[in-house]
Amino acid sequence: MSDWKTKTLGEVTSYMAKGIPPKYIEEANDDTICVLNQKCNRNFRISYDDSRLHNNAAKKVPDVKMLKPGDVLINSTGTGTAGRVAQIWDIEAPTTIDGHMILMRPTDEIDPLYYGYAVKAFQAAIESYAEGSTGQTEINKTRLQNETIITYPVDKGEQSKIARILAAIDEKILLNEEVNKNLAEQAQSIFKSWFIDAPESSSWETGTFSDIIETMIAGDWGKDSPTGNNTEMVYCIRGADIPDVKSGNKGKMPTRFILPKNYAAKHLVAGDVVVEISGGSPTQSTGRIASISQSLLDRYDKGMVCTNFCKAMKPKSGYSMFVYYYWQYLYDKKVFFLYENGTTGIKNLDISGFIETEPIILPPAELVEKFDAFCHSIFNVIFANGLQNEQLANMRDALLPKLMSGEIDASVLDL
Image (tube, rainbow, N blue to C red; front, side, top):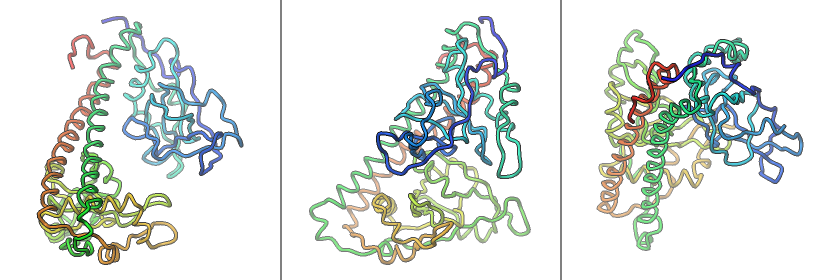
């Protein structure tokens, strides 16, 4: 192995600063730039989905705070989010960060990719640097700079080699995610082609979802520990887990304890469809949906229910995928905004009203069952890729501290 050095994070960081107080604007123009926030930082990665627009004409962002490929970003505030680390490489548009994030860049002695993984290796410790009262916690920057110890090879070529091992794993995860996204889009496109745009659809019967959904099951949040008769341990799928499940991942469902009789009545089985009925935002309606597959259930060692902010639907036999993709088709058309109530705070979906009144087409049963079988084959691939991604992420997370400390010699690895 080559010679290694050990320094504090502050000593190997050339620039560290919090973001800007944005002047938000809703519509993009020649003077707007993207602003990332804590919600954009998840699983060591940056997403633009929750980014907003800053009016640069009202308050110009200093050039040094405009993001560059390789910048490391840390959430500086937020209960449960402070300390999250990500490194950004793909900058979709001129971008900065808000005051709830920290921007960091390495000195010349550290390879930028290595620097990013070195900081990620300390995410758990960085999260512990959050100080302050409940709801007002903030990362202590002095501790971040002085207590985070970075070990690295003197040879930047060796740094790059180590970082590339980890990056190769992340690239495979991204590839699987792209495959899953394409498969889901294909299935949605086929649904539209077979059922919505089909010339013969004008001659099909019409009805409502109540014609093809047999039962609805309320959720159960139970207790966070065995209490009284709440002794049945379950995993509870929440609205927050729906995007992960749709992508083929298992999500991060919490364990809860419910009444055994409630488990008997409410546990989820393959073919069920879970709907978020409370939550949403001004731009995101309630009604997000996830299909419960056997592949998902097999990745948990206990049974599963949905939270009381969701409901589970049991479609007629052979109609699960039809319900799922028809629902998603209407969600993408923003139909569910029309069925929400509640003017402030949490919005609620009038799911009974939607199921009983929203008109849908009812194609021949044999065509629906053919589509159902086709989609199950797609779901099997999506969840197989999701399982592989879980295994890859576990391998990356196990290698990360060992490679960053020199405990494992990168030259002996063949991934």
